[in-house]
Image (cartoon, rainbow, N blue to C red; front, side, top):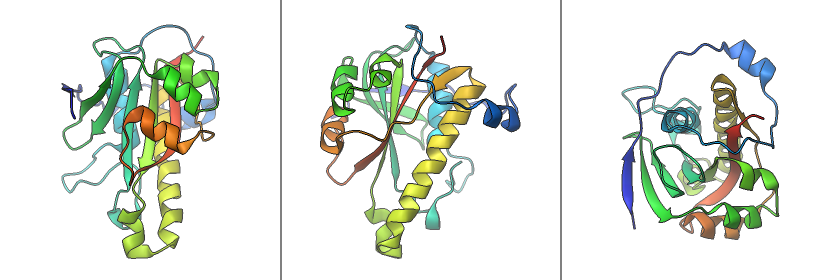
Length: 201
């Protein structure tokens, strides 16, 4: 059940940070200031993960056969103009659908085996995949393609964070079923990444 729809600000397609600078500066950051992000920050990060970049629906991360198996969730702890809770990114409208109300970082940190970065970030971006979207065309090899695509999307988020002067880290150690429950993920979706983001100390 959708509790609320939030329209995101339009993403920006230019910024002050070159791709070379972002690549050089990218580091895993696990400690953050206890400060909120802005709705514009969230908009830009989600667009980096799976934003639409053409009228044909192509996205900014490559996808085998343009089958797009990834889904994007947002766990909000502290964001200006956005209440705490679990949201799903509706990329074609560039908006958020709120699924669960309230700060759910404690549930995610338990799922992530106590990794403090998950609790300390202002937000967590969760990438999941529906394998069948790809395996029905490519068979078992399609699972590799899903992992490749998730890596592309996660790197996009990391580089966008640098451009926004934010810190982030990619987390792969977690209990899948607990992540699914924490974000109200359907059974056919499989979590692949938790990506905390916060202001750098």
